Amino acid sequence: MDFFLEVLIGGLLAGVMYSLVAIGFVLIYKASGVFNFAQGAMVLFAALTFVSLGERGVPFWIAFLVTLGTMLLLALAVERLVLRPLVNRAPITLFMATLGLAYITEGAAQALWGAQVHGLDLGIEDVPLDLGGLLVSQFDLFAAGMAATLVLLLSVLFNKTRIGLSLRAVADDTLAAQAVGIRLSRIWVVVWAVAGLVALITGLLWGARLGVQFSLSLVVLKALPVLIIGGFSSVGGAIVGGLIVGASEKLAEIYAGPLIGSGIENWFPYVLAMLFLLARPTGLFGERSIDRV
Amino acid sequence: MSLSSPPLLELSHISLSFKGVKAITDISFAVARGEICALIGPNGAGKSSLLNVINGVYQAQEGQIRFDGEARRHMRPHHAAERGMARTFQNLALFKGMTVLDNVLTGRNLKRRSSWIEQALGVGRAPQEDDEQRRRAEEVIEFLNIQSWRQSLVGTLPYGLQKRVELARALAAEPTLLLLDEPMAGMNAAEKKEMSRFIVDINREFGTTVVLIEHDIGVVMGISSHVVVLDYGRKIGDGPPDAVRANPEVVAAYLGTRH
Image 1 (cartoon, rainbow over the protein chains, first blue to last red):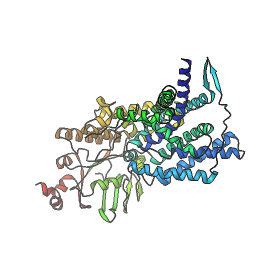
Image 2 (tube, rainbow over the protein chains, first blue to last red):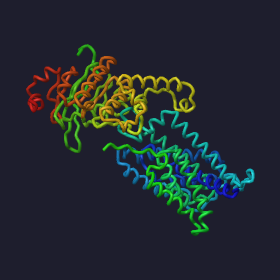
Image 3 (cartoon, each protein chain N blue to C red):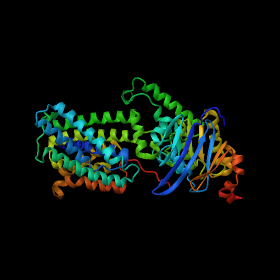
Image 4 (cartoon, helix red, strand yellow):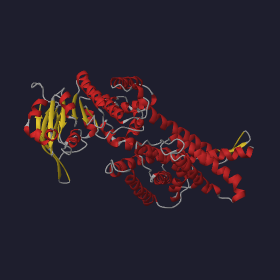
């Protein structure tokens, strides 16, 4: 039983890391109805910038703030150069634009800082912690704490301020949003900047785990099943989806692995996502679209 | 129309074309403060385009817009909203995934003065303002008689009601100028009657100036004090309803087809 719980907790905590990646997608999807393919590239860009600054002797917090500033500049540039010229276009057009943006961001990150692998030490040891007989990774706990704080901040920002309502308005109908006096450009910059912050935190946590390198931009692939299960438009859904993916893939690996061969955790989330697509295409918390026929 | 006060809205020599196709040619007219002005004309006459020029969805290539004492070459939608214009759209531009109340609240977007930090922490001006926003939104909802659907998702409501919600959202902004693009399109006689009553009430109770596009001549002549007639992007009539009705050019171009 203890072993089962350990696997479960380990899986849930790993799931939090998936949730983090997924939240970045949800933010932009909520504000523009677009799957931002560049989110992974933003994670890489943020982590690489932070690490490279650190290696040049910049203290932790200054490097953090400078990176955050860089992500804000990126948000401004994206709004000015990509979103503004494409206003009121079909979502697929914007999606293609984010595809291009992904390559440019990845390229820029590596042109600027080089392509070698960097180690990233956040000063948290990845040793198991003994919690009442259960062994839990200290780093995973820290990551979960960071994610919880981030989600709390986001929910206050989007539920208590008028930014939240404006955001939903912009996502729903840009023309109508403009007509009630919402400045599209400002909302977009806010959303992309917040997505940049999420990318930075994701980049730090995943970077500390995997090393900061090109493959970091592939964490996107881990977010896909999470988004399908949780729903593209809900931060809460991203959390629950992440937890489900994390826990189920670890449990499947441990308990089904010996029966049908190991390596299950790499494909299990996708099978799960496919089942969700069949049964609940909008995910657990996604907004069902209302179309009058 | 009083001659003493300057008009609220004045269009001078507006021309608009799309890639060489002329939609509006050299249109000038003025809307007095407090009147209901109707834009009429056959399909494709340029009515909607003109409305879109007024609140800046389209930018005219030539001409000038003077609104509430400020002259501009071009309007921008959010600037127009900030200056006190609110509007509805021909094909509805509502936030379909949001409730009626939330839709109306977005209309009050520009009335907020507290910063987002105050709002996030629930301190300073924010709490009072929240109550105020909510109260005003409820007032508008009550005024337009849509209380029963306050918490319904707009996308699930019938068309006639959606039209009313859109009007509520525009009204929530407490506009000085209300632009209505075919507010009664697709409605039955009873709904039309109700909607015209709302428009007249808004005009009387809040002194809101209204510019509206409508096809139903009976409705137009009944509620407006000023009619502007367009045909093929040009103005062919401008004046009080009776004068416009008697104008032979208008009769030939538009009314003539109905008699």
